[in-house]
Amino acid sequence: MRKPPSDDPEDIFEFELLADRFESKPTLANYLKIRERFPTADIVWGEFGSVVPIYDIWTDSLDGREHFGIHLGHVIAAANGCPKGIDDLCIALGKAWQKGIELKRAGKTHSVGRRQTISKATVNYLVSIVLEAAATQGTPVPPSLAMLFREMEVGSNPALFQRVMQEEKRFRILLAAFENQRDFGSILSFGKLSEKTKIPKNTISQIFDGEENFMRELADFSDRRRGEPIDGHGVPNKS
Image 1 (tube, rainbow, N blue to C red):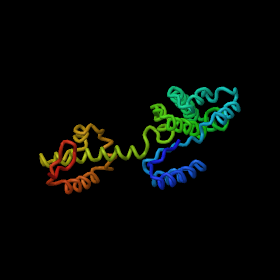
Image 2: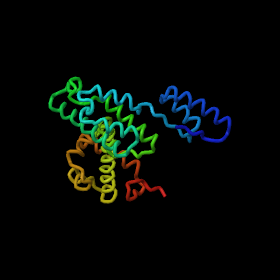
Image 3: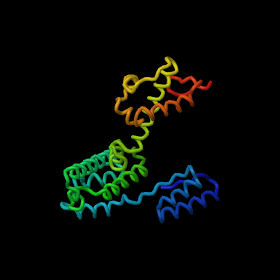
Image 4: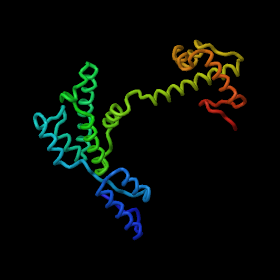
């Protein structure tokens, strides 16, 4: 599906040229060339949703109809953009992926090679079918797909998220200590800071790696904010 971004003949010619190139070789690089030249261009290309290869994959499996708990009907319905089919497929994929996680936790690290659980390559292929179907048919992406993607590619507590949360805690701790020192002239202990911020005392100690580093960071923090009233959101108010 493709729609020229304007009625200008030159734009249409260039768009069609780029779109033909993309459809003959639907790579990310070719797609980005279209979007860079025509930011509002409407073009969707389904590469993996053909029923024939899907059917072939499933008939090659053990019983020809179910593959790691995933029914052929779910896949075909998802490939056709059926909202329930997409959701059912994502739930089935989630269960199959979770089974693999549990087998690995049980020490069965070769479960994929022994066909005891689904491979990441198979899940990624089926997720591509879902995303293409959603794009071509205008079907909303269900929360089940977001959960599956998060578990597979990001994890429930990724390192970057941990870092962001730690920096947010660091700021809250320093702000609480700064405000107390500014208003009352005293420096709160880790125990008092824990009571004030609701952050465990041992977590505070870990974040700053001891009181000496904490005092150094608090001095730097205070130098940057001294004379700048802090609003209710912890943001310097320079007005």
